[in-house]
Image (cartoon, rainbow, N blue to C red; front, side, top):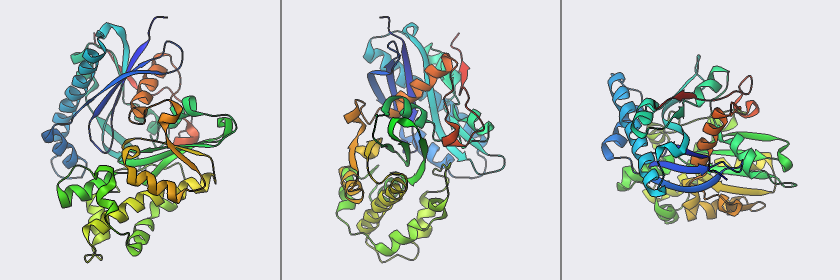
Amino acid sequence: MKPDYYIGLMSGTSMDGVDAVLVNFASGSPVFECAYTEPIPAHILSGLQRLCAPSNNEINPLGQLDRHVGKLFARAVNQLLIKAKLTPEQITAIGSHGQTVRHMPDLDPSFTLQIGDPNTIAAETGINVIADFRSKDIALGGQGAPLVPAFHQQVFTKPDIDRVILNIGGIANITYLSANAEQVIGFDTGPGNTLMDTFIQQERQQAYDNNGQWAASGTVNKALLSQLLSHSYFAMSYPKSTGRELFNRKWLAQQLANFTAIAPEDIQATLLDFTCYSIANDIRRLTTNGEILVCGGGARNSTLMARLAEILAHHTLTTTASAGIDPQWVEGIAFAWLAMRFVHRLPGNLPAVTGASRAAILGGLFVAD
């Protein structure tokens, strides 16, 4: 059977690297082939972090970073091709998520903005690119996020059992698949790794809390945890989505203003519990038992996983590896899948999840020729 290769490109709110994932759709179902992660250089990372917070004179930095990130994404693709020993001509298309720098689904009018110029990716790889997946859903009155539940429905549905697919990136999102996927619900639960990463970067100049070791050394402050969980976002009904625009360094500093006597490791322990409880509270509203399959960077945090398993004791908690997909590559595969859906003129969103007025083909084509 002749391969039908697509490449998915993903860089999430954690900004911890660009994942390029090679997927073969020859059988009709996505088959993971290989992957490559391109680190984000420090000067681009700092520029992206500045751009995520509103400031003056943003247009020039936005335009330059759009090109820089496009080149970075292209480099990830070209390195993946070398690793896979493939040529550009063997790839049907690239599905590029881009790098989100602003997600404002509740403004009027709403908008979402992902950069990483797809024309640059196409020019530097010689492969057609499908990009800007979220804007059509926004135009149809949706949140533009999360988009992965449609993919989760296709690959993770299991007869006779409720499943929750939990992605813990910078922001955490869940997809609830009732038995046989008769009902699909998906939304952002709130912070995933973003606040823990932000705090350890501030206090220890480390990119992230490896395996949650620093959090594990502290004690949860229940008063601070209660205050964090009182945020109005957690009382909102779905469809809903969020990002760094809401849960960020400035917001965290405001929350900590009255807790100056707490040791830093206790704050980190509380932030880990904040992530766990905000996720668990939403899961328990949807299902009292069933399977939870975790993907994203949080799946590699053993302290976080152990705490989730403790809080969700009536559920079975594992990672998507138990269903045959490495948790690190689920989102990259999903955007290869969305590119495939575009090429075959098939819808990529679930209106019941995003709130869009109808299902739609997502993305735009940027040709290499």
